[in-house]
Length: 219
Ligand SMILES: [Mg+2]
Ligand SMILES: [Zn+2]
Image: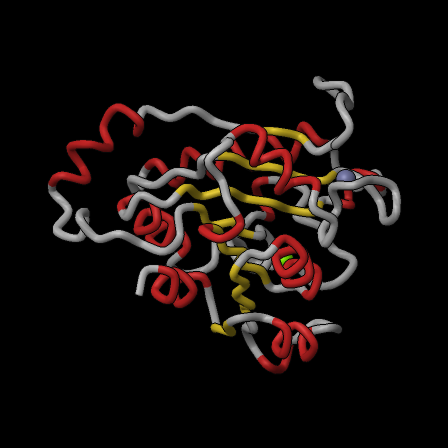
């Protein structure tokens, strides 16, 4: 691994600086919605099942070839960018601990994803992933480590202006424990995961997919 586990929280920061920082003012100036003030400043997004297709239980998104974007993902993230929200991906990647793929492979997937987003004028501000197995760390959702790491990197992040969008009960528990607004992506009722019913009850809002979640965030 390129980076040794360091610090109390062992999640990896794959923050990518983009050229959009210099181009954003022009882009915003052309956007008729730019003067609107949104309740949310930061959107925390789970990855598998929200951004890209979740594979069947026991299979892993181990390479870029297995990373298949869900419909409307790039456009939805572009919209968050345009409206001035920070976009942060927080993803449990237990497959690393299980030896199914490496942390380097995850970084490569995220770099490729960032390049694909750039083709749509979109970007993710930071990626965090937990490479650990259960009960071994403070960063595997629903534990708060990845949020706290993001808050260290972006000190203006505040729970009251942040939302968590995810398709697992652990995403909703993570968001709730931190005081974030939570949005559960329920997806196809035939393929709901264990815990989905509890997540539906617990979440502040339930939608079908990321584009709908973004519409809700910006409403
Ligand atoms: Mg997920
Ligand atoms: Zn962890």
